[in-house]
Length: 111
Image (cartoon, rainbow, N blue to C red; front, side):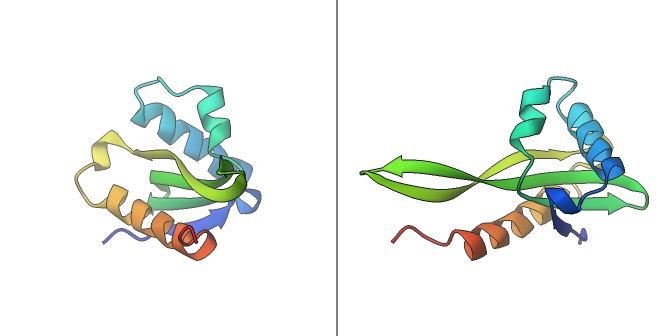
């Protein structure tokens, strides 16, 4: 099973952020914009490494939804990707499981 580390954007080094951007560029075949990258910042990241290489990533970022006159904090999943040469090995599942735990703990269900 893939090991996943979670960390807030503020806790990631510049090198880790560059690795995230490089991974997402590769995973999206170069169709990943600066705006796409920025949407995934400011929240909790789930990262999985194979040695020194980042092979999977996803993040959950708070957004506010307006519903029936109420503002609801909601966790949006952003920037999920797995290196093409590591797909089919459970990395995406491990990243999403970690993000689901963040969402359940931080946002729970709507009352």
